[in-house]
Image (cartoon, rainbow, N blue to C red):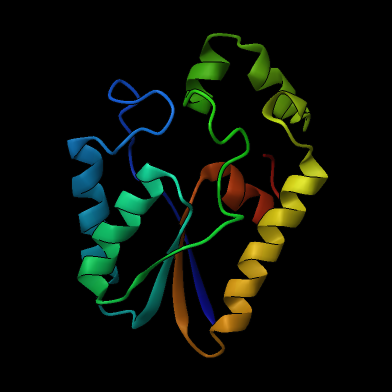
Length: 152
């Protein structure tokens, strides 16, 4: 089984602060990613339910000829809250950055262990469903970091 973890492309929070679509640049990057992956034999492109991930997954899926599958458990912690990049939180000294860096996700309605368990279960189910296949998962930086055991 080959698992490709892909962070969603560049969102445009000026167009929707809660569930932003991709910027034009983000759409081009996602399409280029799909073209780059076109020869990988991808069986399915899984996506979180956020618009930015679904748009990224859709553009990749067009190039690789695979279906997009919406999957729970792949959403970023704090899903449904205002979208703010981690860089912006850090740059502005936002308390949410300090909490995240410390592994405290209470402000986002969860805790690190629960979030990691949900992500691991979702990705584990994807892996189990595709023995011997190549699958792409389009999610969020926090999801990918949680799955790989890094900082949220």
